Length: 274
Image 1 (cartoon, rainbow, N blue to C red):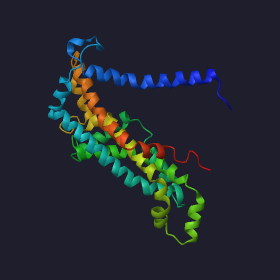
Image 2 (image 1 turned 90 degrees about the vertical axis):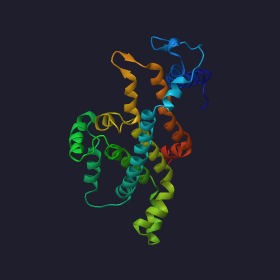
Image 3 (image 1 turned 180 degrees about the vertical axis):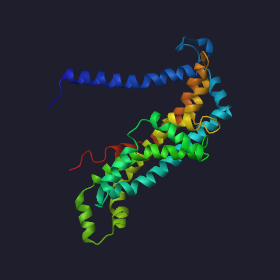
Image 4 (image 1 turned 60 degrees about the vertical axis):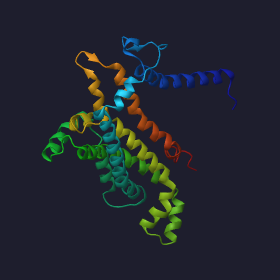
């Protein structure tokens, strides 16, 4: 079916509208982050004013903020690795094997995400206080793993469930064990999907704020909590905060750039299943 001229125009306008909607907030953040205080009026920059680097240079000299970025990277990487390591075999078992209690197990995993974070954060705070985990990186890593585990499990479960049954029937005829089928049959087909799940875990952990603020707002604070330091009583250091936002975006942008092929392939897995 040929697309009409009006349809092409509307599609082009919609695409450019979406691009502008996505790019403008980042452009605003970059411009304010590289502007002098005198060039910012009411939070909006003078777009034609010269660019200055001192906000970014000051941040690189801020050991507290740079440590917060390092902790965010550590928590995001470790919690993603643990979530993937725990969810992958569980997702495979629930998708490709039949065993008693499978539905109950899946419901239990789902139940861990049924309540909003603001409801469960206080019980977790009490628990980690009893364990001596308040304001520690390990407690925050455990919390992020728990929070992201359900999403990871069901995402990977859908990948394993979408694999063609014929290849597993052929493996059964060859006498392959479940471990062999997982390693030699399933894993080569879903590894891009697992990589996509790991990237999403990293982004979710990087953006997480409620648990980070409640469990680690002191020495172990992450970058999302450290950003609050630019907001004082009746004032906001808008330039330094926007420069900090620019630096905070960089690790996520680097991860997305390096994994874009795996992310696109993984997230489209099963979309064209025959």
